[in-house]
Image (tube, rainbow, N blue to C red; front, side, top):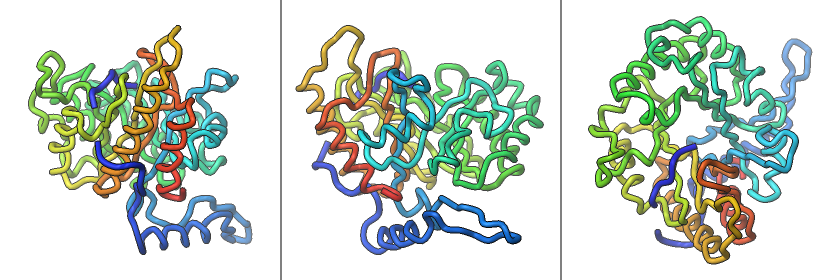
Length: 332
């Protein structure tokens, strides 16, 4: 969860690739769902479609925190939220420390539910210096080998700008990338940045040399950003987003928005219909821009609470806007 960011164009439109790639994607989905493979005489259910997920389409997902449930951040809460969010397919989850295995992690229930995973964890005790020096390599390898072949995306120490220098972050990411990929090359691994730190006009919280935070093209499968605006406005015209985008587009890597929140309802306040409408319009504007920029392969809404308030899409207009995004995305 990031601090608020500041953040225009057309109403919601398809966020995935148009034409033939989408038709191929839909055909593959129809063939892939509930496909039975016979391996050694044992029928195995394979829920994931045989397609290039988040390669020729936009993966649309959410982080769900439903305080009305006994399991507010579970896979079950994510699946239940599809009634409001539409056919979201990838779930953002968090572990405060490196889990012993994928099954024991916050994402452990995702595969059986047919849910894609974007996972975030931190080294034991937050020890990023030790992790960069190989102190936890055996644990990292054990976790990586346990990750299922369902197209998992992963990162360690998302939003690092609060906690370490660019040099320390690059050392951490380069080392972990090599360890993780050696143990399981199917994991998509990359850095996740915090938009709050990427406005050059805000020197009190600016990253400095933005290029210094990139671990290198040989040590990342993607570049991602967490972005919020407590007062709704389009992300894509935000100086912080634009500065990050100008920096990362040069890497040639897929670009992801792994946390996205519009309009934080503060505790004790009543929802403002004008702000809710502005949120729906901002989602539509961002959807149109992202549809025109196919380097973006993932967009995840933070449908939960945070330090600034409640970001959940509780009004019809905002829900319809995100449902349109989800329907246009991978497997939507």
